[in-house]
Image (cartoon, rainbow, N blue to C red):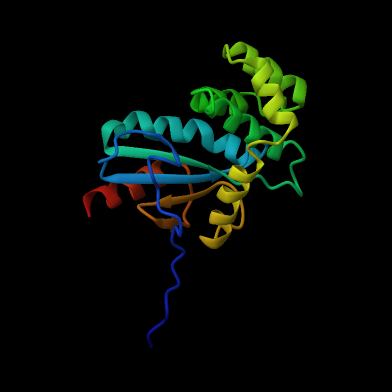
Amino acid sequence: MSRTQWEAVLTMPVTEERDHIQGPTDAPVTLVQYGDYECPYCGAAYPIIKEVQARMSERLRFVFRNFPITTSHPHAQQAAEAAEAAANQGSFWQMHDLLYENQKRLRDHDLHAYAEQLGLDVELFDKELAEHVHAERVHEDFMSGVRSGVNGTPTFYINGVRHDDSYEIETLLAALERAGAS
């Protein structure tokens, strides 16, 4: 008896112009994460991703996309917008890391303090947050996730195909290594 296998795939391709990317463009493996800065599971995945990046080095391209689950995480949307406001000043990854390293402190005054800590133009940062300048960008990420089959965070895609197994270090690393070998 044959069974139809449904595979969730990334509907919006990764592009240098739009995405937040760490690692070489020509890396054999691309890992995309849809994440929520207030999600405890994303917080648990954060050091795992750092470790995977360290182990795979130039063989891995890592992409982060926003997927704030506002029904469960009241500060997730504003935190995502803060990351995008920092990106506007060339500091996406620094803000991304601060948000995950301080998950329990994501109120507006915390976000303001992180912008100060990173040496951003705080006046511009605060203005963009207050006016929700980056809300549409966050929404685009979210909708691309919905269309790609994301239904929770973190959700990972390896070379465009959803990784439905565990994201514990050895399991994720093995899946990435397999993808890099094929």
